[in-house]
Image 1 (cartoon, rainbow over the protein chains, first blue to last red):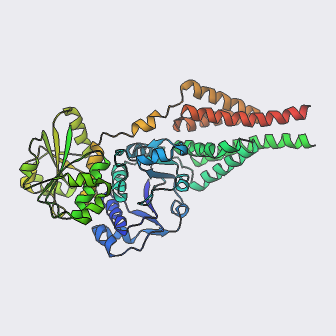
Image 2: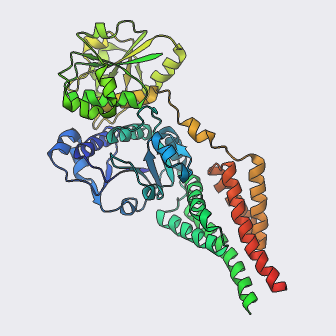
Image 3: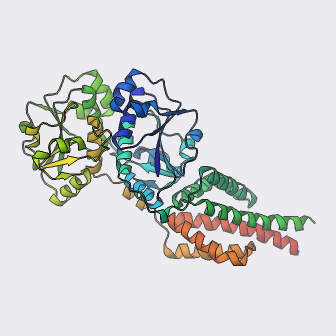
Length: 243
Length: 243
């Protein structure tokens, strides 16, 4: 499994350089930057012998672009964020638990890990794009880690990941397949007159559940098939009622 | 057990500030500096809200002084250091193994962890003072971590703070709740005229997906709520059709 580190709107080029070094320290190389600042001498100095990783990084304009082709998208947050985003109702994974999850998945696919900007982490709408949320257990006294240190801890955990066997490599659903499923679920909630004020929370809950379940492409398809059958049933009855 | 972080002849005040922050992030506070440089505004800025840890650090003139009263002294080295110092013939511990070791020792005492200077790590005579050597597993391509990142990884491992609790305290669904959900899904497939020959496979698939997702009790309930709403919709339409 490939690991893609994504920094979302990082503010300081030193941190980008430090992250490049961390990647190389743990044997990774795929670095995406969403709307980064200009990268100059400071970043290079901090990257030190990881200048190759820094130079090869991808600059993109949106998180959506950064997570293209990902199999799993994990967002990171500080412990502080837990209470701040309680309403997102997610189960939190420690970096170690993320590793265990990844071990179970096997060889193929891309795990994208999002790290928010230094000043306020990942925004609500960015967290919404994540299948799972990873939280580094820190002290309530000062839970907010420096960006590159957070990356170091997460990649340290993942670096030991040994790749699963071929038997485990059932093809996981792509981001696009999962998005289609979520849009379908959204429509479905409308169709069944699901209570408006509950809808967003429930959709988010569904996203978390299915994210944790690591759907295969085939499973995502079957789930949509069930929805279609139910819709057909609802639609048919509607049709008959009208006629 | 107290954890004492000792930086041996650190060169850059930024790194000292970053280490202070890492200590506070993981709930530690005891920082010793052996022959540090002057600590000024740069260190303060990097320490951020951990200025209290930075201010309270002990400046000493020798490693011997820094390790006074320690129960165990652990020295850190990069993977590169392993071969360079092979003649010291010590067993190497990973940060995780260090944690296990410390767990076995019990409550009292001080664990001192030595981190060498940025340019060349701990010297031979400093390593000789250590009871054990801790080595962070890094890539042969670039094994040398930034000083504060190495501290972050080691203290992350030793930190007592455990996210496990947060994830585990979300109450998982009981077997009975899950069975009720599956029975409900089964009925639902009937209600939407799901193809008979596909039904068993699909049910099994649903069971696997939801099993992997480790549903909480609340999530299982919400899922059943969605099914009820859909059934109500189907049922209502049926009702009208009949009337």
